[in-house]
Length: 66
Image (cartoon, helix red, strand yellow):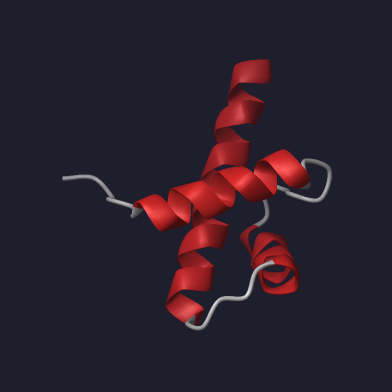
């Protein structure tokens, strides 16, 4: 089975990608700081899930552009 992400993770990540496309990168650590900066997240786990999904979305976009 694959990784299942909740709708909250997907919704927040897509919104961040829509609002800050120039700041989001394929680097997980940079995306983690971006999430910390723009979104109030209580738990570290949720922050990391959002940052990981952001990284995943950016890598998919980069592949499509090739």
